Image (cartoon, rainbow, N blue to C red; front, top):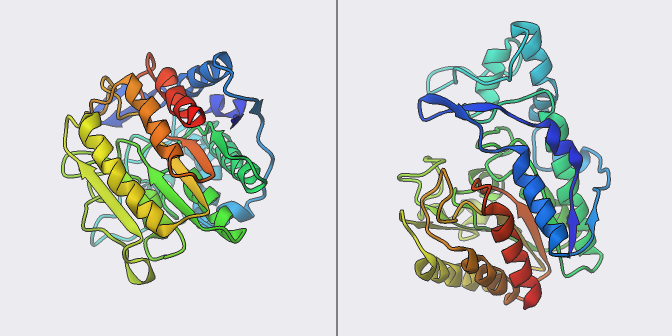
Length: 341
């Protein structure tokens, strides 16, 4: 299995995040991807390749041009205003207030960001842009005949929608790749197994019937992103029934998670995609510092085996997972479980 990876992600290195009412050390850090890369090489999963360069066209099929311009400019504008630090919003255009797409950096941040946990650093835009190239490079190798590929994308992407970023995500790597497949005449399905609902991916495809989105995640009644991911969200218009959310309670372990996989796979089989994209979040692990599921390391081998049973060309895209001691092993367990099948 080919792995696509870029050193550019190292430039995105937030030191802290403001979450839960306090400033805390960042958990979405460069060591996440570096440890996974080392394990991929140690286990000889397959060649590690640099991404190809893709134009903005594929990104603009998913994201608004104004968001792209803002992400490119934001840190420089922040430094002009404040002289130092990372760009983090402090106010938002809630109901009754107006969005601001021009002018003051604080207003623009609040317009484009939906949380305080996703700072823009000096290297953020370059890292996010490289991650999109990684996703597209992996998609292209599958379109050309590979059974599977692993896009070691950092920063992650599934919380970013067409015109909003947040949840450690700036560009939606899975959505960009899925749209690219659709533009090649293929029928993509996205399976999101991150602990947190992929609100951005859902929003992008919610009114469409050419891309299926299925998400297994912690119930947003208690878990981030709080405002999307409920079971009654099934798509709108042409997209009705093409969005399936499977929210699960705190403490979910493999027995119940496996049943949710059964439901997800049944819907994917009915859709009959040409290609499967997996938003591979590993924060379902028992011991993840910000999550509350109870999957164990061997369960990720089973997850990979189960995904392989669908018999579809499969693109794995790296999303969440924050237990640095376990992350590399459980990530590679999914890939090895898939390959072993």
